[in-house]
Length: 124
Image (cartoon, one colour):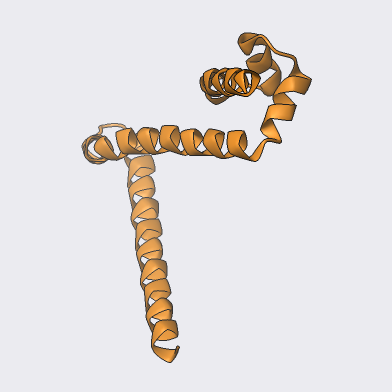
C-alpha cells in the first residue's frame, strides 16, 4: 500500500512539469524518471484524468486573464484607428471588421444551436 501512495505522490508532483515542459522527454528529465515510466503513468486512467483536469484549470486561468484584458485590447485597436499611418489604420479597420463579423457569426451559430436544442427537447 505504501508503494501505491508513494507512486500517487510522485505522480502529483509530476503534473506541474507535464503542464510546463515543452515535451514529455523534458518533463521526464525534470521529474527524474525515464520516459518509459512517464508513458506508463500516462496510461493510468486516474493519472490521465487528473492531468487533464489540471490542464483545463490552467487553460481556464489563462482564458480568464485574456477576458479581463479584452476591453484594453479593444481600446488599443480603437486608438490605432486614429493613427497617422494609413497602413496601420487600414490594417486595424480590417481587423476590427473581421472580428465583429466573426463574433456575429458565432452569436448566430449559438442561437441556432439553442433553437435546435429547444426544438429537440419539445419533440421528446
